[in-house]
Amino acid sequence: MALDVRETGRAAGTPPARPRREITTAFVVSRIAVLAVTAAILLYAVPPLVATGSWVALGVLCAAAAGIAFLYLTRRFVPAKYLVPGTVFLVAFQVFPVVYTATTAFTNFGDGHRGSKAEAVTAIETGSVRQAPGSPEYALTPALRGEELVFLLVDPKTKQVSLGTPDGLTPLTGAELGITGKVVAAPGLTVLKAPEAAARAAEVSALAVPTSGGLIKANGLSRAVEGRAALAYDAACDCVRGEGGPWTADEEQGYFVNAKGDHLAQGWQVNVGFANFARALTDPTISGYFLGVLGWNLVFALVSALGTFGIGMAVALALHHPRMRGTRFYRIALILPYAMPAFAMLLVWRDMFNRDFGLVNQLLGVHVDWLGEPGTARLAVILVNLWLGFPYMFLVTTGALQAIPRELTEAAAIDGATPWRAFRRVTLPLLLVALTPLLISSFAFNFNNFNAIALTTEGGPFPAASPQVGATDLLITYTFRLAFGAGGAQFGFAAAISVFIFAIVALVSAVAFRRTRKQEEVYA
Image (tube, rainbow, N blue to C red; front, side, top):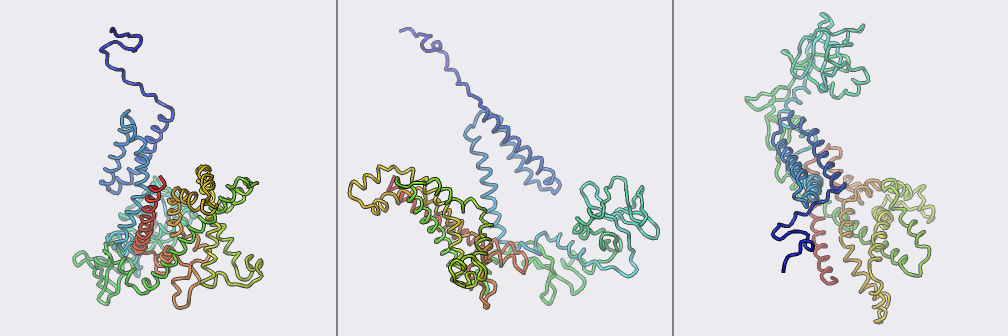
């Protein structure tokens, strides 16, 4: 039979035409948006990476940018165009913070250990500068050379103007002096006015100008003096010589230590292995309260997650009944706690539980110190958390209930099941299949619910025997107090405790998800 070209739309032997891809506005806009964001990141990140010599990071960034440009400038790899942005954000905002926290846990990173050894030596030497008798004094004017802070120094005797930078002191010509003897204008420099200099007071104090006789440092905002460092680093012995020294470098602690065992305040960041984890488990001032705090933390998270679910489900079931009237009004009223800013509501509830003028005591006609006793304080924070959390569970349970066919419950009633039995055998299992992931996320959130404790009880009440741990402290608030309390910031130790918290939440979540999969297999 002859081939009918009119029916087939093409002649015999002609290869099938390649389908024409429709270019939508959304596709074009998304392509432009991704490429624009990539270009903006390059413009922002490349200059500082080049300035600091971070060639590995620069290479990774350029390779990633080239890959994204190739992906979005070709018509192939359509699925990857949608997967790559999500993957990049997942790595940037989820994987990287977790990995960075875990690696920080093996270091002594914190106050006194924020930089490298070279930076520590510089800080020690500049911080020990003392004015020597008879050393020169200068009239100081802070200025900017581009974005760099510099000193304009005037010798009161010779009126010679010099430019002071971290590289040294150089003569400056063409500067204009004012009546007070300070520089008011200089070629190529921006002289800072008094308010501008005051705003940069910390930078002015930190800047040190090296000279042949020592260092020039600011003494206030209008005067600078030349002094000598009381402590000086000696590379031959890898030590700091001077007052109380010599101070020998201890690479395990990241400190300069003398023969008495004392160390200088400024140290550097080093790898300490499992020392932070060992401290959390063996230090009696920490491990002695760890299990108690963990137990209360688990109770608080479980009661908050299950309590908000129970209350939200009960309200949702009541409003889901076909005979219920005025459901729109009730739903609006019930989601008000969810619509209010949580931090503001926590502060309001804290005042409502006040013993002397709180609304709770006035309504009940009692004089209970709700936040001053361990039992009542824990009850109070749980009640507040339930009030804040149940509207969310009410909303998601309402949506899940509407997705359950009424024919299932009606069939159960026809088979003779009581309302309670129908709920327990039909409605509840179907709700749990849909909402168990949300319950797990609610547990994880409440396990680390810092605001609920910090803004109501601040972890208290605190017993006299252990003022560092309170009755309502969660692991997150306990860690915050230990790591960022009076002893200064200890980021490495805080990261180690965070790893413990992550492991606990991950274990509970994994077990719960495994049980969820079994439920899905049963009710699939």
